[in-house]
Image 1 (tube, rainbow, N blue to C red):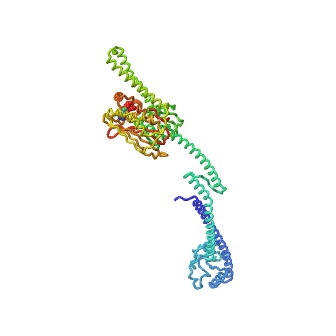
Image 2 (cartoon, rainbow, N blue to C red):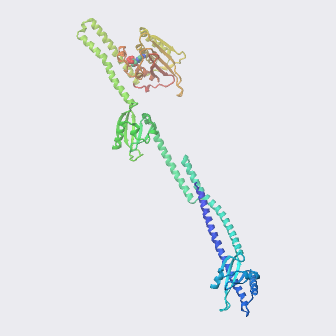
Image 3 (cartoon, rainbow, N blue to C red):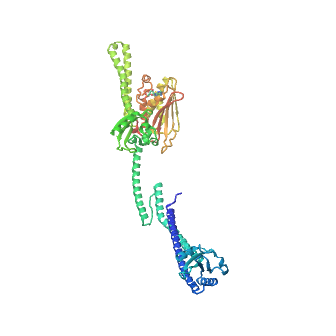
Length: 614
Ligand code: ADP
């Protein structure tokens, strides 16, 4: 059981007061008792002397006093002295006793063994307090030796006084004293409770305020009017709390700012201590490595990531304490991360010692690769027809020109390759113009139906040649939209051209236009038109689907070239669609073929400058 300070103070004071009162009471009773006894004894001593004096005349007469005269005198003196008077001979025989009837006197036992008689016989005076053998009451005795003449045998005069009077007085005194002590105890009780309350109240106020402060960070302010040490303590605590609050606010602000910076950073940040244990990671890093801050903190970096190159980098910087840089590739996701590792100064455990910043270079590296591939592809694409042209021209020059049929065939090939070269260059120029924003997309009101009709009329003759069935389903409730009609025709032409190219004879090509489901998650809800071209052709393997919109990416290069493709058609489609703020993707068409879907927003502002560069 724990006692509060209040009860400890109250109880302690009470115990101290009670002990003090009891000791004082006991001592007072004892000293008063002593004084009463002394007074009582002194009075008895005076009485015994007077009684002795009263007996003397009996023995000074010529004849010896009779037993009855002695008894008479003893009774008289006893009455006057209000005490029991006994006259004892030196041999202990009781000669007279005021408390004994005359007839019984001879039966009274010898008094030699009485202490006061023995003392009186040996020293002249004797005293004792004990219950009387004769009366049974507690009695105080005083005895005195009566030596009438040197050769006469001595006598002892004894006076006994029952002590019940004294005992009653002392009991009365004790009663009154204990009553007074009881009242004093009650007063002390009240005072100690009040004192304990007045001392501990400000303390419990302080404790309460401090508890509130620690639990819900409320403003800490102890109100007290006390001017004493407790008041001083309260005002010091108030001051301390104010300072603490200001410091906490300042730190919270700094922390919030730091957190905001760390949270909003695109780069991953990881802080390690001098042992290489993780102290902090930001959300970007959590996403990069697929870990959570909770599982990361307090664990060794090596154990957490299990990436040899990263471990080596951390070990190196912890050892050398100089800036390091490296680039790693994550095994699972294949993401490429550039790491800048800088020493942060802390040398002890749980102190920031190294800060690692991870830049995700995946996209950049991808774009770099695309750029390199593009240059290689362009060169290759241009070189192929050029080599062919050069070869045939050389063949002509070498003599084939003299063979009319061969020269005709060669020239036709040269023309075809020149057309192809031209086509590639035109497509490239077109793409570069769209990418660089060299052409601005018009924003004219248009009907999708007329775009579809225009395109189908262009494509029909080619489709007819291949016995393709062309189907168009257009939602009659389609609203008109704003866009560049010429460019959208180009989009649909490219898609239909591909559908025709990659669908064997007799296949079906379906153009579908309808309203896309409303996207409620954005404000205002986005409305869009969905235009799709589906064929029953050779289809595109799933892994190639995301890449067919890249420049020169072809699933089957030879087949594409044979069919006169440049590998740029879908890249142009993607750029035009994105220029309209839309999206394009390809999915499998069931049961076979591909389905290209173009989603064009009806109420989203243009994002020409956001067109991706792949
Ligand atoms: P290409 O001029 O080679 O057709 P595109 O950019 O138009 O170039 O298309 C890129 C590649 O996507 C093509 O080479 C082809 O492999 C594939 N592709 C495009 N459309 C289809 C389709 N409808 N069916 C199957 N493959 C297609």
